[in-house]
Amino acid sequence: MRAGLTQADVAERIGIAAEVYGRMERGRMMPSVPTLFRLCLALQLSADVGMGLVTAASVGAALWEEDSQDKDHLPEMRRLLRTLRRMTRGQLKLMNQVASAILPQR
Image (cartoon, rainbow, N blue to C red):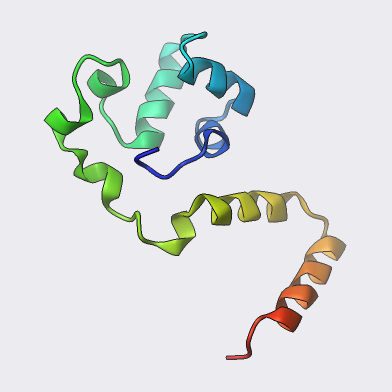
């Protein structure tokens, strides 16, 4: 939550299904060592914090907030980008036409 990521965002970044990540987050499943490593990289935290041995505050929680105001990092934008990546060329062309029609001209 502090990083402004959804479960789907984190799961995509570490290469696992969102459902699997949800189970890990709820404590119903433990990640493998490689998955824990990718998770720590994606969330920009040390393995100590990832395993709950120390708190993020004790190792510098500033990492969480470095770009939090940037609109490209909002969960809505990431969801939109994931959706756009799945579209066909024709669907993307149509989406571009719709966006051009509703957005103000620069």
